[in-house]
Each structure stands twice: as C-alpha cells, then as structure tokens.
Amino acid sequence: MTRFLVLAISILVCLTAAKEEEQKLQWTDDDGLEIKIIRPIKADKCTLKSQEGDVVDQFYKLSDKDGKEIGSNFGKKPYTFTLGRGQVIPGMDRAMTGMCVGEKRKVVIPPGLGFGEKGRERDSIEKDQTLYYTVQLVDLFRSVPGEKWETEEGMTIEVTHKIEEDKCKKSESGDTIHQQYVLHLEDGTWVDSSWSRNAPFIFKLNRGEVIKGMDLAMTGMCEGEKRKVIIPYELGYGEEGRPPQIPGKSRLYFDITLEKLIKKDEL
Image (cartoon, rainbow, N blue to C red; front, side, top):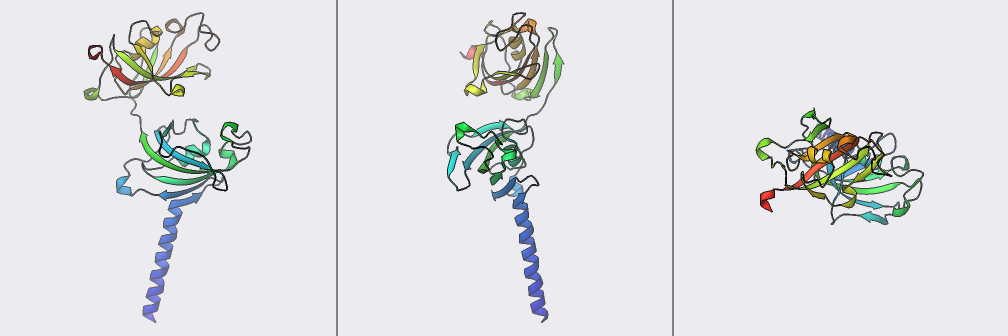
C-alpha cells in the first residue's frame, strides 16, 4: 500500500512539473495575444533576451486560420526592426519580446493588436482578421549609449551606440561614407529614410556632397556607430527649405548609422 502511495505521489509531482513547464512555454494574455514557444533555447545558451530598443533580425511565416500561407521569409533575408518603436504591429512587438536568439514561437495575434479594422490590402489581409504567425529570432543587436553634446555651430549630437576606442575606425575628411539614416521634422513628420530603399547613402566626407550639418555630424564617427543629430536650418536647407517635404527654416532630426567606412588612403 505504501509503495502504491509513493508511486502515486511521484506521478502527481511529475504531472504537476510537466504542467508548470507547459505553462512557461505557452500562454495567453488578457487582450487575446497567444504565444507558444516551439523551439526553446536552454538557459546556458541564452546570453541575451530581446527587449525594447533592441534591433532584431526575424524570420516569419504568416498564415490564415486555415493554415494557408500569406507570406514568409524563412530561407531568405531576415526582416529587421527595432522592438517597441512602432515599426511593426503591436502584437508582433510583444511576441518578439523576451526571446533568445534561435528561439521559435507560434503566435496568434487578434485584430486589435494586428491590422485592425483597416486590414492590409497589399498582403490580402482583411479587416478584423486574426493573424497566425510562426516567428524566429535570428539575431539581435543592443545599443551601448554614449555621450551627448552641443557643437559650437548649434547642433545637438547624441551617440546612441558607441564603439570602443580600440576598435574604432574613425571618419575624417575625404573618406567615403556608407550611411543609413532616417529623417524627421520637429513635429515628428517622416521625411525620408535610406532603410526604405534597402541601400546606404554614399558620399565623400567634407566635400560638399551633403548639407553642412551632415558633414559635421559624420566627422570623427566610428564605423558601426549610431547617432541622433539635430541640425539647425542654417546648416541644413536654409530659409528656403526643400519643398514640398521640408519647409523653410526647418530643424532636421536625423538618426544616422555609419555602416561602412572606406578611408581615403584605401581608395
């Protein structure tokens, strides 16, 4: 009798532990977001978990409720975005948070956290459609913030990702710059971005090929460094602006990355 009791207790403990483990791998939030981890990563292999502000590389497959594929980039180039910055639908921001590199999840995103009442015609997503995703975190990049200062010319520069001095390949006049950028106006209006063209903007530094403020902002920058820059109109497009996108006397708000640097003596 005692032996059977011990066995029963052992089975109950095992079932309870299994149930707890299952709950760790699968959950539903109060607003209907469903997440199931289908490829977990062991704790000793997970050095970082994704969080707001991280730049993530993602594989995804989107299906409808019947399992019919709508779109996928598995086996292709990963999709890259910054977590928690509104660059993707809210449900995807949350679904990709707290992931280890290599982890894979199945995600069900309700309409309110997806494309809502408008849907997304170009992807054949109807209004109020529930989205069924399989997602994988391919890689992540976490910024190391640096200094912030104002220049004599009236510019504000903030290093949002710094490069250690002993690893810094630094830009100077005559170097060829491969730059990624996003430009907004003071009221938040989006103007332009190199990311939308999937190619960097290339120019020679301090050769008058860009606005004066950009030459100043990119000088002394390390390859791989990221900066936020506010450029006064005197160092931008002046009193006339650049209609219709940029009105006269506009302060310019740039997020810039020195993606690649070719030194003038390397040409």
